[in-house]
Amino acid sequence: NYVKSQNVCFSPTLSVIDANWYLAENAAAFEQEKNKAAASESVRSRLSDPEARKEILANQDIPMLKKELERAERVVRAAADAGVCLAIGSDSGAGNVLMGWGTHHEMELMAAAGVSNLQILRAATSSGARLLSKDQPPIYGTIEPGKRADLILLNADTLLDIANTQKIRKVLQ
Image (cartoon, rainbow, N blue to C red; front, side):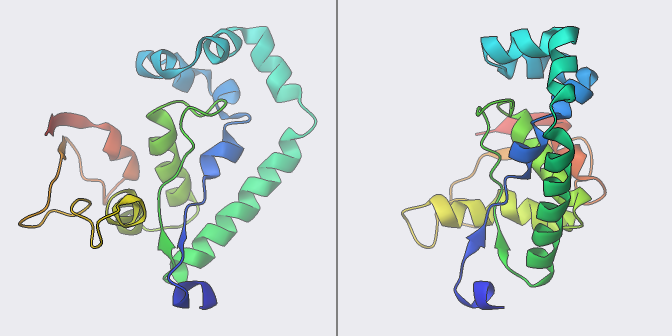
């Protein structure tokens, strides 16, 4: 309650923890063309090599990092349940957190932690806009008369499955 009363917004960056092993453990996710294209040359080289993936997964710290992710998920769930403002932050482009994929993966991790899809969508839109905008209230982040917006039309309902944010049909600017 104290955090909420201080008007703090929490950006958990769960994908930074998870990226230590996720793409090495889930090669099919990395093999998608859009994800390979988003990787730096060094990350692409490392994750394309089966032996390098085995080395990543043999890291003695992985079990401890998986426990850290579980702890972080509990903190995120508690914050969401308490009504603390959440914002999406994936540190996309840092280490193994691929541009674009990192943001979608962050949303999936928040859903796995028990945050509602509606809370996640707010974290990715209006909360993020409030944090990043010099204009208060922000002139973007919600669809309202007088505000600016890029609209993303999707082929599926994100309230049913947050992974549906990746089923992009069209972007209107």
